[in-house]
Length: 448
Image 1 (cartoon, rainbow, N blue to C red):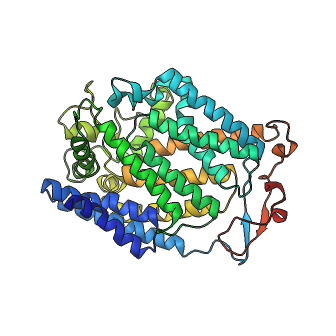
Image 2 (cartoon, helix red, strand yellow):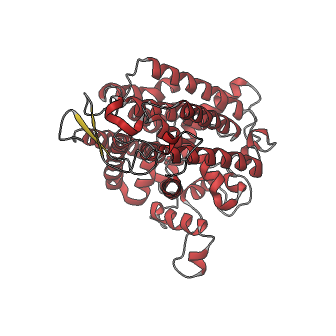
Image 3 (cartoon, one colour):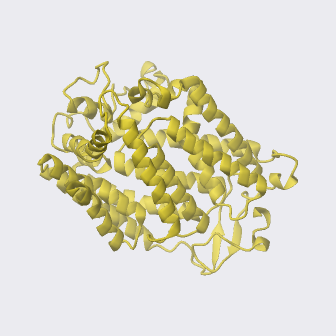
C-alpha cells in the first residue's frame, strides 16, 4: 500500500500544479512515482536515477507550461481550421479497409490471447506479413480513425455506425492482442476523443473522466489476468498477479532505468537514440541499407541490450527475455547526460502540448493523425522507443494521407453528401471560444 501511495503522489502534486492536466500527472507518476515506489519495494535508492527522474519531470512540466503560454489565434472569437487531408467519404472507406486489415492481422498471425505461449505471442505483431500493413492498421490505424471521427461535431447515422464499428474493433483487438497495456490504450484514446470532440480538456472530477477511469480499472484487472497466463511469471492467484503488476510497473522500470544511467557497459556505443533509427530503418528495409553499404546498422536496439543485460544474458540469446522500458529521460541521460535530460524532456513536454492543441484545432483525418501523434508522444516519454514509434507511426500517417487523397471522391453508399469534401480548404469557423472547433450548422456547411 505504501508503494502505491508513493507511486501516485507525484502525479497528484503535478495535477494540482498544472490545474488538472491528466497527461502530465500521469507522466509524473510514471517517472518520479515509479522511482519512489521502486525504492520502497526494493530498498535500493539509485540516487542518480532519482536525479534523472526529478530533473526530467521538472523539465517536462516546464516545457508543457511554455507551450501553453503561446496564443494559437491572434483574432479572438474565430478559429482558423486547416484540415486538408480527407473527405468524409474517404474516412468511411479508410475505416472499412482498416477493419478488414485488422481481421486479416489476427487471421494470418493468430490470436495471442488464445495462444498457449501468450507471453511471447503478444510481441509477434509482424507475423501477419503483407508488408506489415495489417499489423500497423491494428497498432495505429484504429486510433487515427476513431479520433478523426471524434473531431466531427455533427455526424450522419452512417458515420455513427462506422464509429461504433471502429470502437468495437478497437476494444476487441486490444483484448485479443494479449498486451497488458491494451485496455489502458483504450482509456487514453477515449479521453483524447472526448477532448477533441469537445474542444477543451475535461475537469478532473467530471463524468467523462469517471467513465474513462472505469475503463482503466477494467484494464488493470485484465492485465492482472494476463499475468496469471505468463509462463515466466507463474502467478497462479489474484494476489500473485497483483504482486507481478506492481513489480512490473515499479521495480521493472526502475531496474531498466538504473541499468541505463549507472554506466553498466552501455555508454561506449552510443548515441543509442540515433542508432535505433539506423537499426529500425535497416530492419524495415529488409536489410537493404546494410547490404548496399549505405550505412552499417547496429545489431540490436537499446531495449534489447538493456533487457538482456539486466538478466545477464548476451543480446544474441535465443531464449525469451521480457522487454523492458527505461523511459525517455533515462535514454536521454545515457546518450547526452544531464543536459540531454533537461533539454530533451522540456522539448518533449512542449511538443506534447502543441500536438494536443493541433489535434483540437483541425477536423477529420488531420485531427486523427495529430491526436494519435500526441498519444504516441505519451508512449515515448513513458517507455522510450523514440525510433520505433516515430518510424512506424510516421509510415502509417503517410499511408493514410495518401489513401485519403486517392479516395476523396469515392462515395460510401448512395448518399451523395458522403462524397462532399470538407477538408481541402481553409475554413473560418465562428465560435465563442478561442479553442472551440464547434460551430452552428450553417457556419460549417460541408461538415453536417
